[in-house]
Length: 115
Image 1 (cartoon, rainbow, N blue to C red):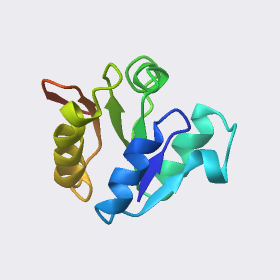
Image 2: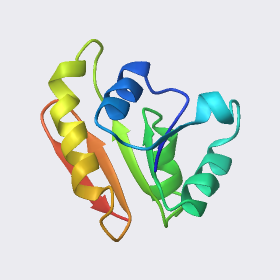
Image 3: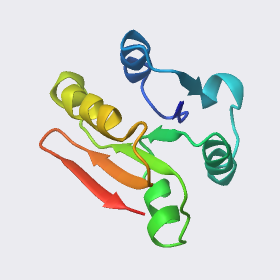
């Protein structure tokens, strides 16, 4: 399951739904919960977190939070179409792959770090 953080533009929710992915919207089901609570939900369901929040990078790399995968979107609006392919490629490659990753998706590239 792909967990969509509250700060993610609805464009991405619609795209993933159209592609047939099972998503869970934090803003619809758990609005206002902390980042640590989000991590626990994602870990308990062995899902992927899609976010635009840089704080998750800090939680992973500075505070050692592991055992979950993060797809972090970095783009300037309205560059949706320019990173759409990189997002879909990231999800398709790592949705069911074993292991945990911090994946940064930009217009130019996909950066993958095992965590």
